Length: 336
Image (cartoon, rainbow, N blue to C red; front, side, top):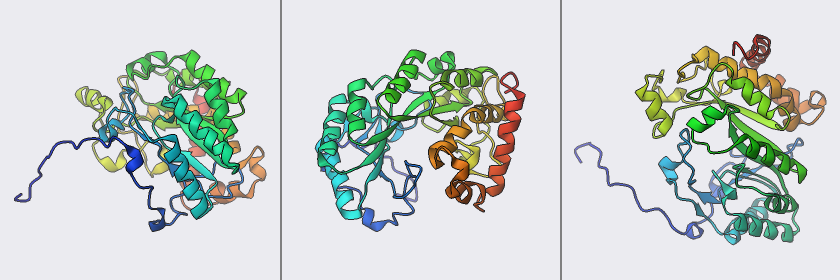
């Protein structure tokens, strides 16, 4: 009215997600919406699947609740399996990735779905995100038997005090146990970590490396981003730690944009020190990342040179990143 905005308040949540139709993939170029290859061969596209909405956990950095709120709403195992079979029959899909915040919250549902996939006899390969305190051997074995090849865990940091401040509510023992259990049943793991969280010191990055150096398979490092609507944003804003509110700069890695700078500092670390911490952690796990994507002998894989070394788009940025990896490692944790 009169060019202004009218707030009608939040709508009620959809209670039964099984009532929703499957995504209309026919309207999209599948090549543009391929997640990424979950095998070194990279021979077929990977479809993104969402089996639930919402996460009940109170992590201060996560903005998922601004969309889905904190109520966990799962689709049924049968409904998820029906979508998998639809994608297989329509597009020949054999690889998929669950992009849920927390697919493993309900053990019975995960095992029921896994049993359906296994009994189909189709050689699906898939992966999923999980919290370290929501998995056990029975669940992971069922997932593995159904073609799951990888589970990604949110670790965030090896600094116990920082994890406490972000209300992650997981322990070192739970992190180590979940990674080792996944490896025991034959799954590879991904470990999400961040630098630049409130409360971090110049030794926090080294603590993260120590925690994951023996158990980390593919360690994925991001820079903390205080997204609006999160508790992190509110606290950082109140303390004057937000460096910009130019939203186009609110990305989580220097690999995404030229001239990247963190959009938030911490009480102790400035932007350059946060970047040093990012590259310091990366320097310990970059080789494993290449091996995960391109195979054990990645330097003999033509895809490694075609997609990373020789690709024209972002070539300069990648070489600058390689230089920073070496530089940050030489500086060591005391200066990171």
